[in-house]
Amino acid sequence: MPALPESLRSLRQRNYRLFCSGQLVSLIGTWMQMVALSWLVYRLTGKAAMLGLMSFCNLIPVFILAPLGGLVADRVPSRRLLLTTQIVAMTLAFILAGLTLTHHVRMWHLFVSALLLGTTNAFDNPGRQVFVARAVPRPDLMNAVALNSSMVTGARVAGPALAGILVAAIGEGWCFFLNAVSYLAVIAGLLAMTFPPMKAREPEGQSQMGRLREGFALVRRTMPIRSLLILLGMLSLLGVPYSVLMPIFAAQVFHGSSRTFGLLMGTSGAGALAGALTLACRPHSHGLGRWITATSLAFGAALIGFACSRSLWLSLPLMLLVGFCFMVEMAATNTMIQMMVPDAFRGRVMSFYAMMFLGMSPLGGLLAGLVAHQVGAPATVALGGAGCVVCGCAFALHFRRWREGARGLLRAAGETGD
Image (cartoon, helix red, strand yellow):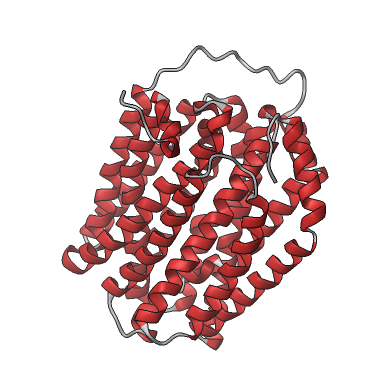
């Protein structure tokens, strides 16, 4: 294939190219479904608390079941695991589309669908993390993680924008149907991949619960990994639920429609894409710790500014900054942990990453919905932003000790940087 720029070096690997091309199509559909589902819930109920509850049902299985998903990801070939999760997710999307298009959809259908999809994601996310790490050479790992984040956030730009137009034009049900069809792209990509034979990994007499405790003990005693996970978890709990309340900002604060909702979410996604591409262009991991500190603080400050704004044209740049900062913090955290963790523990440790990234946000979404019902969406987002600033400050106060510990782990893994 033609020579690729250094910022795209991971795409030299055939399996990774297939993974990215299929996932890009599928993730656009996923974001379309997420936006359409939020709008459908708000249209059917008009209640902020129901938006929070829907987010809770979609993501709480990840918090509960991700460690089990990590165990499976450490033992089952990544392609087999991802094929299974993608087929299940496609089936759920087809069922949801059928119910909505035939006007038989009820709120309990949406909640059950969200719980089942969340359960699927509890196994899918650790499998993706392990797949990315095994699909590229170790020197290209940071680039692969950043490009994977770029792919996710590129879909986050296109998906909400398309959903905002399609929901207004043809309704939520067709968004669900298009998402179901989009899974065929990633399934085809996975089937086209080739891998060398994989040696069976025997448990060596250790129970599955013992292996799970072993992974938890590694996270608990490794201060740099533990600190990164705690910071990410707090930002997910306090800051990320702004997206749950976005339909309220679109309809009540900015007096718009589903298109306004899609514009706000798409702008945040554009900022996230810029953040991921910024990391992809970096040739090494040096300085990532300082980036994590700075973007954590800026993320909270941008949320406070957004909550105080009553102008859509002022809020859009703030959403751009929100997306940029959280993506850099999240992707840099992913990169640092992937570089520090031993291969034998990768699935289990990255399952704790999934718990913090995806599992804490439903708790925050549920809490945000309940708080917004009492004090309003703007005040809720402002409080969450203030909490993110406090967490960023706490991480900054211990940064020197964290950096020394991270350097030791990176040296042991044959890497450099902080």
